[in-house]
Image (cartoon, rainbow, N blue to C red; front, side, top):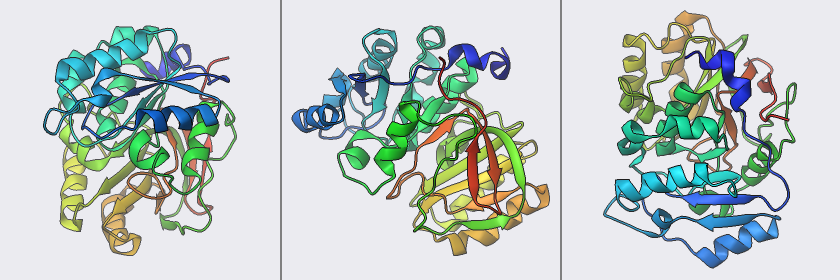
Length: 312
């Protein structure tokens, strides 16, 4: 199936007033204050439905694989659910990949929101359904953690359909960006956590980078491991077809320390590279629509949507 040719038919719908968010935990466990979560959504004119796995823990997993998978499938299938918000990352999404019901997801397109370990779900769902998902704030660390704006504002603006074709995804001005390689390029924005992109090679979630704007971010990985992961992508042929690179936050590594490696890896490709974008394990955490067409201008330091994110 060519997802790019049939993407429009599986765009989600923008959230309306009183929309209901499913709270799921496809990966690791976290303590959830259900009353605090319900109040947070109510104050913004929304509702939430907390699924069983979000309140369970089995070691480093939020409930068994069966429970976490059932939560995801139930949230997509339930017509009362308008968006699916992951509670946290950690580890566990990969364990579900070979049992995801992509046909169910294709028939019930809804925004899925999360990052870090949730990258595995973003890439698998896009590869098999063409559905745009959102690399954005999760419930515990980000939304209930009161991160700086535009963490919440960028997420709710995109989910609410307030950004469309020709609109810029605004980066907070107080955080400097670095044009590593100048240029302008358009393509589908795909990627996420770099460690997960490496871990999912050879799986149903393997990223197809042909013609894409590659987005990468990570946390607590020393520079040599970032080098190893980027080299893995290069040796796997995953850098040959990219149109540009948006580099998110690499918590623990400064942009100045990362820039020489980025120039070494991506410079020979002649594609624009913009680094320092505040998305990922950082504060603020700007929402990005995975699978959407975007235009990256690394010299002007802009990222502009090339399509609407939702169906009419």
